[in-house]
Length: 326
Image (cartoon, rainbow, N blue to C red; front, side, top):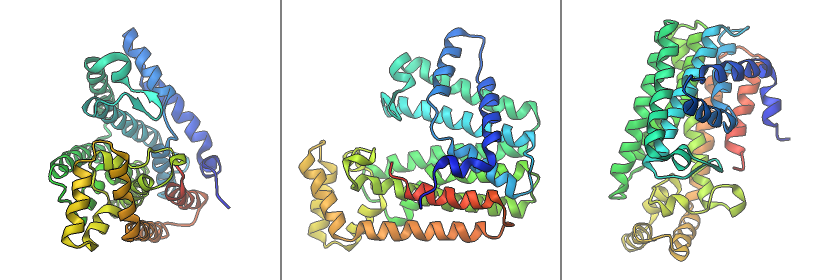
């Protein structure tokens, strides 16, 4: 039986409500335009998966009830992550995020860049005002890795020569580093020792990698999934199913497929030809097996922590992230 996000969140439901109030307060500004934009950002926030990872990890590391540092750590991650998303939409010239208009679509690029800078400064000040240097170090490292991962992907996308090793380095930096930092922040804010913080970080990294592979698999699904089918192929992004399929192909087939990726120009027939090739070559099965391996490794790490309702919820949250349908 599938568990809903509300059921998973049950042990921290009151903490999440308190976090919402505190986070909203941390976003306020005396500049009317900025306050209006902050209100827009808060209203369209997603499932709040990141704060959940922070809170559950803090609890399994002894932070029960949650200390104030845990709420600040979750807010820091949300502020810095939201800043990177606002800037990403400018870089990608994207007019939508999660079905809503992006900041740059509504208020133009100049304002969007300044809003991203403002969010970044709010996060830094929140940490510095409370001497949360350990938390700031963890999250700053994640933001650096996010940027490096994006640039590595851009560099490799030009030549489409991404190997599995490079792919895993990109997703470790782009996606997994953020979930890893959530778990490390949760452990650190609860006063855990260095070895426990590192174990929590590694747990989050493995969850993040599994999460990203799941995201890559959506590209080969049906239109109902919520992500347009073939969007990664249209954008010339090399993901695990395609990388594996190309590794199995002969030279001529490989050349033909890479030509279709490089020159698809949004043409449905060429995108579909790549999708069919990946499915026939076992690319999806290989990616699913790899995703499940990372999930299992994460669960093994998690079971080193004492049994508790929060640990059970974390196990359910891992399964939720890789069984989700959008």
